[in-house]
Amino acid sequence: MNAIRVGLVVPSSNTTMETEIPAMLHARESVLPERFTFHSSRMRMKHVTPEELKAMDDDSLRCAAELADARVKVLAYACLVAIMAQGNGYHCVSQERLSKTVAAEGGGDAPVVTSAGALVSALHHVGAKKIVLVAPYMRELTDTVISYIENEGIKVIDSVALEEPDNLKVGLLDPANLPGYVKNLNTDDADAIVLSACVQMPSLPALAEVQQQYDIPVLTAASATVWEILRNLGLDTVVPGAGKLLSGE
Image (cartoon, rainbow, N blue to C red; front, side, top):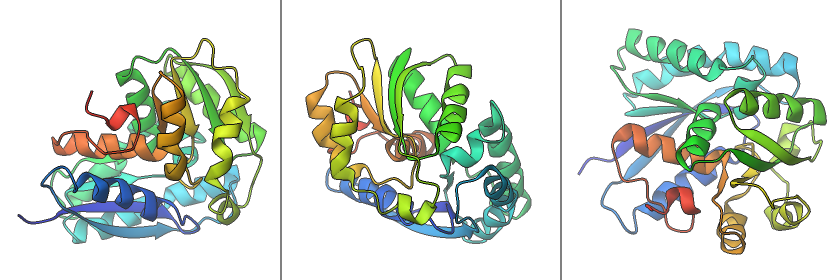
């Protein structure tokens, strides 16, 4: 069986996407036959500001063209806030732009997913109407993310913004702190917990632990991206130890 090539469009300062997404899909290999390889193209971005996010998003088409050359089977643009900062519903625009670029560059009809669109789709899939979330961004950008999610019909009833503007430092945040952040949120009426609304903030080491503490689904931007990758490939959405979303239930 040939390995499935997964293309990753990565912010240049992101150090987590290329660890957590492969880690989940390699964990899946312990229970299912498909095998995966990972191929990245990077967009410059150091600080999580609206200006840098816009410039970075403009560079995503170059990344899509490069990954088309590798004939990847699926392409994942995993910078949630870069999409959400461009305006409500922009994940649909981004996916269409990138898909057209992939096709024009000979990449065929390889599906394109974004972490922003994946998170929204995953929350609808688990039936979430009210959620809580943890985000590393400054409060203003966190509020932008909240507004984007609420525009998709999902109410954010509580949140924490860690207010770290340096994207490299976001990748150094300790996931062992995440259970405590969630504990301080009001989850009484929540249908789901977004443990990390950012693919750069490490969360996989805490995902199973937090899921064990709550009956409602616990998911992250990264786990939602993996779910969307698998769904678009027509594969079973199963990853051991990655929360209810990827449990196959």
